[in-house]
Length: 407
Ligand SMILES: *Cc1c(COP(=O)(O)O)cnc(C)c1O
Image 1 (cartoon, helix red, strand yellow):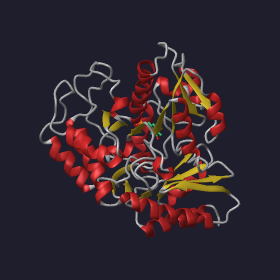
Image 2 (image 1 turned 180 degrees about the vertical axis):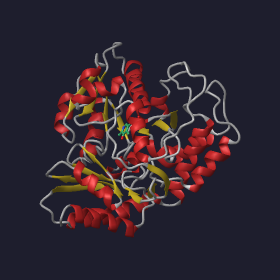
Image 3 (image 1 turned 30 degrees about the vertical axis):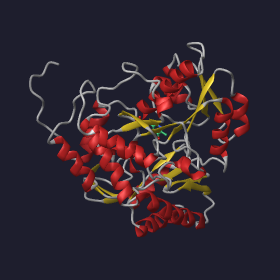
Image 4 (image 1 turned 90 degrees about the vertical axis):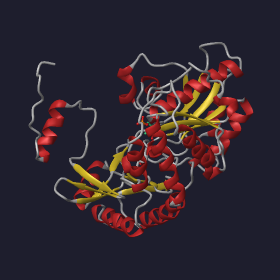
């Protein structure tokens, strides 16, 4: 830390800024070279003033649209009073946030964290302790069944059971206690249950795996399997929850109520990281003071932003909107007849267009047309615009795809 003053130079031109990032930053991402400087609703603008439809929504973190006025107002009002107290003291925002979150989701209790990965880590700790205390398993023996193709975040425990070699292999030693079964295969799940199994962890639609929708009845079969063997069903709804698939929770599509749900991303309305674990008392109460915590989790700024983010989804009927617009988007995409398209699938406004070829060059072409999206799993173009997107803008996005796919 030698310099006593910081350099005053700030490179003004995008390619200088890119060079700065490349020279000074870790290279753990490979972004498209679009430099965003402003955003509103479903749209973002680059430093040259070009406008793009944001069809990624920061992986569903901006379901409410960029810079929603009501969420920004909650942020700035709360910032003007108090932002962080730690949980060593109480704050006057947390109770109201819990009240709205439990009322909208129907769970009895909330444990607030910050990032999605932390919420899933918390759910895993909760399930393990529940297994030892309520099921009487010998310490250190609990197993959790997870799904092939899962994505739950990037901590060492979470990548321990990733199916992606790159996410996992050179980050060991790995956390034991996980067993992987094929996604969507109820018989394989049933066969993997052992006396040590305490829980099943799954995404109701696998987002990062390429928008993989499980076969009809799979979520109900998971629920039934958990009931039969006394296991907790843990649903990671960090990407699928809060309206993205046209329901508050994607598990609602099959009328299934998990025992534990993780939320994140849109819970912070795209302005602040807010995540949470939901469960009923019988499960949540295995956590006692000192068992778990987070300096920032449940801070007053997060609580105020979280509550506003939920109220916007409810009051603007964005869940219903995702359902209606999602149907329309899926139908239009399925009408595209291109030999490059292998399959179109999705739920609500979480849609994947699987190509027969790598998707990255097509995402780059879409960028030049003003449509921002990111390939996932190599060959899939994921379309997940903010739920406030206009119908006409969605139709335009489909026209862009038709153009680059030469329909
Ligand atoms: C994004 C995501 C996570 C991780 O959230 P972070 O906030 O990036 O830690 C976990 N699970 C699912 C399903 C996700 O989509």
